[in-house]
Image 1: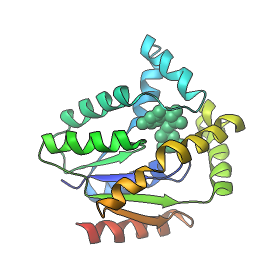
Image 2 (image 1 turned 30 degrees about the vertical axis):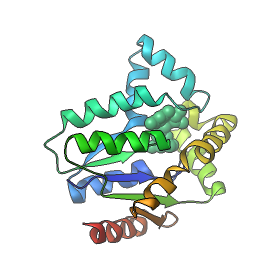
Image 3 (image 1 turned 180 degrees about the vertical axis):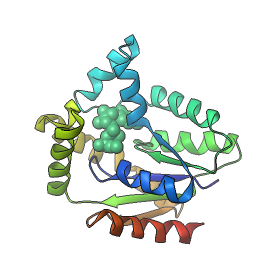
Image 4 (image 1 turned 60 degrees about the vertical axis):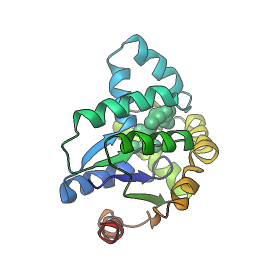
Length: 191
Ligand code: UDP
Ligand code: MG
């Protein structure tokens, strides 16, 4: 399997680039944000709890996200590999992911971080909010908190993969094709 962690702050282009990667490499896309939003829109009790956290820009608990990830991986165990998009978001989740993959004799192949400056992130998120209707993309306070949560809880995940020599930083500014070409170069090197 080729298991890619696509990493970066909110609005860095993880979801968009994942679509290109799926087409070229045939990987299965696992976006925890998308899974959480699906649960949210089902209107379940769990979905309502998730909504409260997302509407504040806070993280959903490690346990809940990990359970979702495990279910998804086991359901797609015959795939060529996964793109983990938006996960792991904490170092505890990163350690858990290693253990879970080890149980199925797999590991993370590469962690690609998209590098985009904060002004550009804010512009992109607000633009996306106009189209997607996502409430957390339309409110400046929520966006600011998501970026703060990223710096505090998520950015340390870089150290985790750097220690395993799996971390590669990719310039996330430029045309979709340019960024994708950089991603392909990093992936082809890691294969
Ligand atoms: N979220 C979370 N854990 C995850 C994925 C998402 O808690 O593993 C929540 C968090 O509140 C985040 C929101 O869902 O701000 C949106 O996540 P998504 O990954 O869709 O946003 P992106 O980073 O792609 O802009
Ligand atoms: Mg996303």
